[in-house]
Image (cartoon, each protein chain N blue to C red):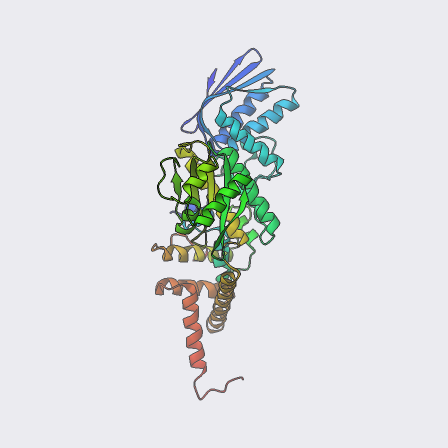
Length: 82
Length: 374
């Protein structure tokens, strides 16, 4: 994945589906990592309706990446913060 | 006559004879092609035809957005006093149009903002919206309305609607039900009629049948013809007695475990085609999402444990962040990033990394020569 593709509208949702996580499951994992947004906000982030802050994006990315690691993969979701 | 540049597999030819427009569609109208279809219909309507015919005989597939494009065109034409004739109206398209009508009458809101038609100028942002699900129904819409957890009436209503949508849209379906495993016991939570309720009950009572197996084993079971079926000897004769000849059960899953099944019954043997099986699996996934969001999939105890774990995890991560903030003189977000990078380089989950940091900080704080706050 290149930087250009990085801000695709549904990137996070694409990865959510790849990771076979329901919205609720992803939210719970995000919440576990300290995420402060509601499930409703999270969905808005996933579908590009609301733009998450860099921090929120990174917490979601971390939740997804940990899931990919559980599935034996690497960390495919890029972070906003370097 | 004009041939249009279209997405692969989608063909549309607009033909004007005087003020009569005929648009011939062919191939697949998936959700991406639907935008193109919206443009084509708009362009034809802009020429103010007195008659408009949509020929869908060569159409192989049309998704929810395609149907909405047609539905919007129909509304636009109605406002102009023109009738849109769809011909020859295949059973497939009819069935799918009924879904849209049902969805609209059920006040299902589109995920997109209100729009009069599907012209490109109304797309949000710079990119066309990506196709979200390869289903004929847009599960997002249904989900959005049904994503109101904890109210059992809403959940049951959502499941009943889903059952009805599945019954209408899956070819060969005479009845549909949703079985759910609650506290280790299977029960029917939504069914299209009493016969189907009885059919499910027979399976629970005998402990046999595709519904039971799909719910417990977590993969799908297809009884193509109960006349030759041998897998469930106690249950099969009872189903035949109620006139059922074929059953397709797709598992429902939440939090990675099987929690129930979506069951489709037919009075005709061999009535489920490949695409019906695909539709069934889309509906089953949808039911899974409704149930996951409603959190009725796991017992109260399991849920309580998960939330407790989640809260503990937050607590430990927050503590570790605090330690890093103090040690590195950084803000909370930078502390999170440091934690995340450390967890990645150590190849452990962030929560474990946080635990190690808290533990080592606690140990150093517990050195005997230090004065402790009680």
